Structure formats: C-alpha cells, structure tokens
Image (cartoon, rainbow, N blue to C red):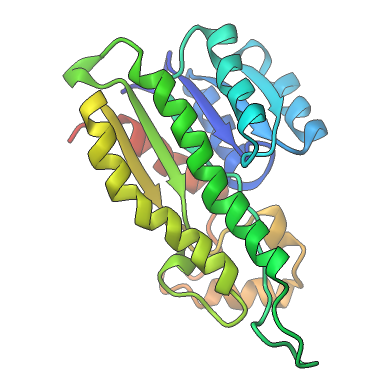
Length: 239
C-alpha cells in the first residue's frame, strides 16, 4: 500500500508519536482523520494541514465515539485504508506504596481500558470498514499499526499496569493478523523504546539524559519523526 492517496485514522494524533505520524503521512500525500481527547491540539493540527485532515474528539475506549471517528473517514474522504493506534496513557504506581497502601484498582483498570481495550475498539471498527472495501495489489484492503512499548517485554518497578496493557497489545497482534489476513488486512505492532514526547518533556533534563544514555545506540531518546518513518515503512513494505 502506498501512503500517497490513502486514508488513515490516527488515534492519539494530537501529540507525541501520533502527532508526528499524522504530519508525516500528510506530507507524503495521505489524508488523515485525527482522533484525540485534546480538542485544541487536534484542531490546531487540522488548521495546519488543511483539507488533508479532519479531527474527531473521542475516547478510544468509547464505542460510539470511535464509531463516529471511523464514519468521519468515509464521509470526508470516501474510504479508510489504514489505522494507526497511538492513543495511550502512562501510569507509574507500585503494587504496595511506601505507606503500605495497595495499588488503586481503578487506575489499573483505566490504564488497561485505554491502552488495550481502546486499541482493540479502534481495530474492530476499522477492520469492519476496511474488510468491505475494494482489494488493491495482492488483495490488500488495509493495514493496522499498533503501538505497544518496550515495557511489554521489559517492564520496570511501578509499571505493572502499563506493562500489562502493552503486553496485551503484543499478545493479540498475531491472532488478529491471522484472522484479518483473510480480508487482506495486515496487522503489525511496534514496541518503541523511550522517545522525546511531551510526556518525557515533563521530566527533569538530567532524567531524560540518563534515560537516553541507557539506550545502546544511538545513546539518546528517540525522535517522534523516526517512529513516523517506521510507520510509513510498515504501510508500504511488500512482503
């Protein structure tokens, strides 16, 4: 599939990895539906990109809101060829804290609800639409790119909820890829390391430097544009 001329829905497209992906796809000729809870950020991006973009305010775990996002792609651009799942939340919380109190169950559930359930919610709705579309080269009808995390494989103390939610994304990738292959839809999950996103910008500079130095090579934080370039590669690769 070529990015140019295709229509993509990007969750979490208002900031960080999602925002970089939206810009990258648009620059390379795609039309994009941006989904985010941050309306000002999403609307600002649409103003920047013009007629190539639309914005929908939605909680990815909310069925009706995400259905509206998928519908917007068809109403605005006539089709949906790809879904890029970047929406997510981060939680750092020990199972038992210094005061001896247990991890709040509500925050664990919310992390899984957004990161895992939200990802699946977007997939199921987008897949239904893509499966009904015309087949392209090699019978391809669509591509789904999910965002997990290195924490899915190498979680740290305090990341029980976050690691579990991202490991769930990894775990459902192969079953989804096998099932949706029958419709000509590819499913791929990226597990990024530590990137220079707004979330990271809130940390002290020394902490960010240390995290970057822990990366074998190059010893720095990843740039969101590098993630976006990988997304394009996944979309366009023929294998």
